[in-house]
Image 1 (cartoon, rainbow, N blue to C red):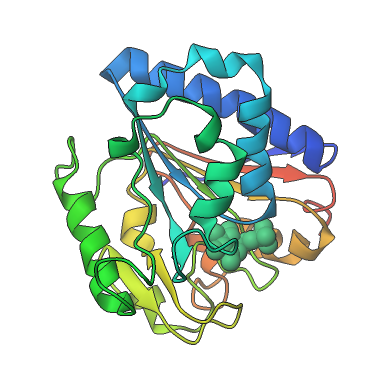
Image 2: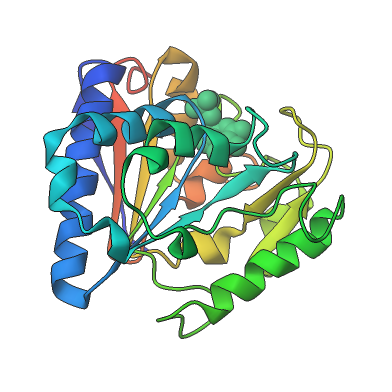
Length: 246
Ligand SMILES: O=C1O[C@H](COP(=O)(O)O)[C@@H](O)[C@H](O)[C@H]1O
């Protein structure tokens, strides 16, 4: 686990553009070093804005999209194509616009998928895919970069304060009664999130400032799950000024 480095940006637009440039470079470097790269996507406002900024930059052509593994850190357990799904937003912002290998894009199952409306079975299915992924020497691969948004309540992925998922050691869990709609979700757990080489926490706006402060100050993760957002080799808090204001 690494201590966070804070990088400040003027506003969300600059933050998204800078994170997009950093993401392209990170993927290109990983592909040069290991032949392929793996990223874990987040939903939410800034996370999706970063993907749109990647799509908008010519630098995206430096990436070998066919050698990129795409995963998600959490998902709203809704039917495929639902606009509230993180997958839907990521496809519209980026994945539909670049030549990714469909077999290497691995969304979390939808509620009308092979397990039907059973989030526990869907979580187990995703855990099995992670375990079986090339280069996975354990429960999950060593992701090159894992991006996280953060809620005003300091949740990351779909790990909410005071909920049993925070202490769950399985790599992927079903989340019920989420305080933020929709109520049923699937999420990577802390051991999986923290297995990433680099974790990037993205936050924009003053509503996130207190959560960011807690995330940087070693708060109790049961109160502020964001405090567990740490990568093995590097942790970045990519913030705009408003999110850093507390
Ligand atoms: O529900 C979720 O919320 C967080 C934060 O979203 P934001 O719109 O407030 O930035 C997001 O990171 C997570 O992936 C998502 O499922």
